[in-house]
Image 1 (cartoon, rainbow, N blue to C red):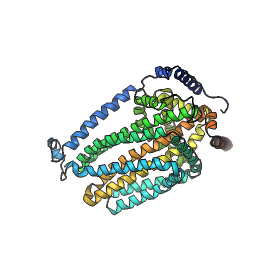
Image 2 (cartoon, one colour):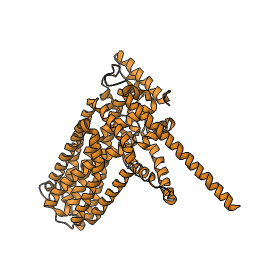
Image 3 (tube, one colour):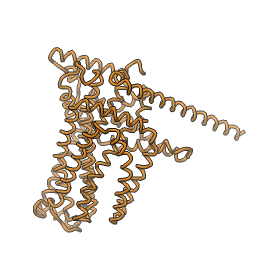
Image 4 (cartoon, rainbow, N blue to C red):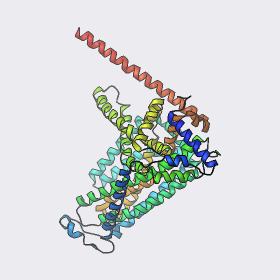
Length: 493
């Protein structure tokens, strides 16, 4: 694995060489641009239709109660569901505006502080999230919100059990995150891309929150309002994931390029690389991003949880059998939906499913999958995202509690999602660097060695240990199965 690059790496070498030759002749990147084709156009169309349809719906819902009640005479269609006293959109809109401001400040603060205190911030996030969830659970019980109190208590328990199950992996995870932060801080233009996309998200959230405030102000019963808020939240989640993964593709392309050319100061790096990466992400690859954003986050979160519990089950064969079934099911899904696909999309312009499959086969063929499975950087960054969302939701929830205690959960939960999207945009910059580092290490480990020899040695040593551990486990299982066969044979005799 260490001596021979994969075929994909050879392909990229040829593309990069063509790019460099074209740059010298004044026609930079022509060969690469001609090889790019549009992929997953169906999902691009679905996303755009959803965006236009939901945007129109949110405008109508907000405008119906803006400055005066039932401006568009929509209440005649919901009169049979009327159970609450109606209000005005502008009554609740400032709470969402405050949530947008808090989420933006948290996102910018994460990006700035990661460059100075990355390891300490990650450690604090891992350990404080459990406590924060438990505190919110207690507050919900105190406010009489039993369902949400139980929900946050379960969340705190799952978070605590997960951290305990992966505590031995955190030192290596922090090492990877620290080097990923170092990488992105050496490419300041990708930070500006994150700031620009955060501004785009804020523009969309202004319209989204206008509609959400109109729903909260409506006279419909709690059931009707909750259904509408769930639909709007699913739309915001998908839109936020698409924008985050667009940043992921842009940053991944830049990080891969920097590693391939031996550093940020490499003279062979083509000019306007960032703009080309952004152009690909917003045109030919945008359909693949929309498609992957629907499923990737949920599948990888489920995979982290199953992996964590699986390693701590012990000898409970019944429970182990059930978890193994779920584990293999999720592993099958991961083969077609994983975050490493975005690096392949950025570099080669493939479709999402092919990118995910090629990335996973690359990891399995080189053994790097053992290192990827051991790393928890994605889970740690997700904890930071959730923590940022909780802080945002708490700020708006407390404000709502002071004025309208009956609508605090509606406002708190939806503003929490806003905060998660905004903070997630900051986290995805680091996650992009992590995924690019693993892809480069699997394709040609010498790329990492040339960039940081000490980090390369630490990765190689950890990979060797994980492969030895897997071999020992395989021998142990094989020996155990043989002993079981011998016992069955003796019993039958």
